[in-house]
Length: 395
Ligand code: XMP
Image 1 (tube, helix red, strand yellow):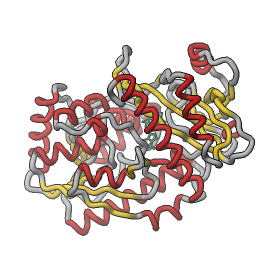
Image 2 (spheres, rainbow, N blue to C red):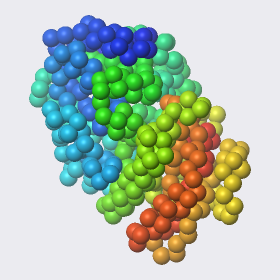
Image 3 (cartoon, rainbow, N blue to C red):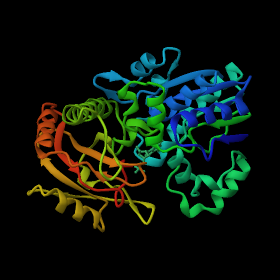
């Protein structure tokens, strides 16, 4: 199997789109292309480019039951409204029992990888697709290959890529579900491979997409399982969906009301907030969560800070942390509930590094009060740890 990636492209959206259309015609003209949509901006951009190039495409959205809800709208409903021709494949009944009870982060990733690839392989077979298009973007490639995109060629075989990955093993950060899987197609086709998130947003703007898509927060492939620390259960998943929506939607509303946009570019050129979400855990202070030291993932417990809210002091302390992977600032304690809720809001250019969004304490307190209306809520924390030394997600 081959991989075709569009590399070295002009950055201006109009020119980029022209180049992408040429690239797609070069590799996919008169072929049938499978395209998995995730509801996120990267795969949406890939799909829009395929449409622009008038490539015969089968767009598919896989609903495994761990997608987020934003403003009360399920990801599935959102994508159907955005792209009415998308085919929704519902695997909730098969997939959920498989992930329930699994606590290990890499195992969770593997389960998703297997579920995605099973569905994709089935449709590719049934529809006799020749190619598989995806929304892999620059940081995904550089983190899993451990090399710069300019070290790759437009067309490479899997063998060539494996060799390259082995040579640069020290650059590997984590496995990605959307690279290194072999499908029964002639090739994959990756039209947005050279773009950063910000550049992908520019392409969506060029295609006149709605603001809530352009500024949609990145969401990991392993979905809400990456935000439930420890084993996923039916009960904690239902709770996570509720608190996740509350936090993401409320912070977006705050940005909309304060800045007229749900995401801004701050003075450091970061997208603010790049991601905002709630993670949950039973007794988080006794759980090992991921950190990043010298580019490698580590697992250590978080440290709790309480008392004076001095944003700069907390960030400085979190940046110099040793022996722990995070500082969680305690917003509320509650003896009653079951799940600790951690509010995470980060600013970033490309998710490879991240700073903490300086949300006002009043807003954090208001969010805490709303969280406390759920009987399951126990202690509430705001994670003040940049990346590095923490990762964005907790697994
Ligand atoms: P971390 O947690 O490594 O996340 O700082 C960096 C970016 O990647 C997303 N993320 C993932 N995306 N599969 C994905 O497709 C994964 O296993 C995965 N883990 C993290 C995360 O949301 C952030 O944007």
